[in-house]
Image (cartoon, rainbow, N blue to C red; front, side):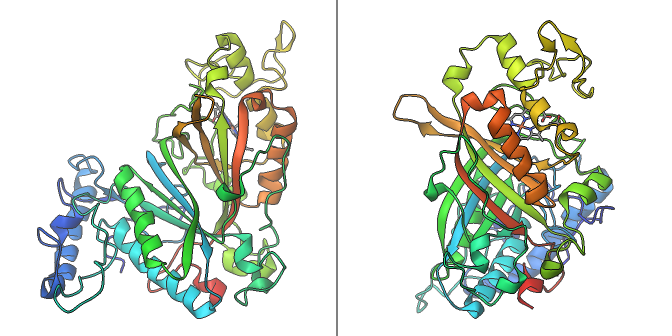
Length: 447
Ligand code: HEM
């Protein structure tokens, strides 16, 4: 189904399409949960509603659309949720595959593709409803998002190293010879306090939306559909994006109070995306299926905000290497001015050599960049009465071995900010390319 796809961009992604004000999943099924024969009307209602939405976006640049009415096409050259302007909410889930059957795994990917395609359009996860009377089946959608629009939902799937080989190195689903050479579990970094229950996973689902209910609904329904084939290993809620992934977005702030995402790779930087984010054909002859995809690195990083909040403003800025107010580098200018690492200060360079932006800057890391797409999290409080808070760091890179591990190693060893950080979760996934019409996610891997 490509009815709702927006116009293609040069980078292969699609522009958002919008629905008119107030048109929700529920509206699309004719004012209520479609049951029995009423479900037959679904396809017609959907087609008309969505077409009207497209017209409103194309004609009026979305100016009259209600907040949250954006819809991003699920199918395209690349998966949505990477260069898509970072939405405000995240529900990220890692799954373990519980079946040994390749057929069941492929069926799940097909079912997930269909459900994701529907939910990103603002439709219920499944089509139609079981009969009320004799049927013993549960509803085809859990229901909590029925009155909500698509809310910019994107669903991005990834495959972890353990999908290819189990802990003993056994080929689980006949795909081990296609495992990307760079899809290795991340090494242990200095300062890591990783919890196994928040790390790893055979599959991942990154659901981002402008409404938390919509993101949670997406993960919940995919988990429901996968019952008997997969189970949730861990999941993380995030709010308040900590990056900008498009020049059209303002730079948000992380929980240290600093602007985050200033120097990020942005959707409009076609050359940087090709060089640093998308896996190119020929990068890995064994994993040709991954061309046009990427790698997702996830790190749950606890931030000791209580200790941070007792540091002077000058010290906080020295840890980051930028001013807190405007986000400009300590060497001067405005937020977007490139940092001058050679500019002298009273004790060495004005941007300290152990400041975060100096440690991770491409100039000090062989020129590599990453597309960061993280979120703040606050998961209640800890045993010491502090906040269990931090940054759920997500980066998309062309190769974790060259674009993430060395940078993270350098950060763990020499970044002054590390004193306030405690990484508690870690995972890496290969993110297959976008899904074409009639295909399922990861189809080329299993072909
Ligand atoms: C809680 C953890 C972290 C915090 C609070 C944090 C905060 C920041 C801030 C405030 C900036 C400056 C604004 C910007 O350019 O976006 C920044 C930049 C950056 N961060 Fe982090 N960061 C964290 C973790 C990481 C990790 C784990 C990595 C990768 C290993 C990383 C890589 C980068 C990169 C590559 C830049 C851009 C540097 C440049 O090009 O100037 N950060 N971060």
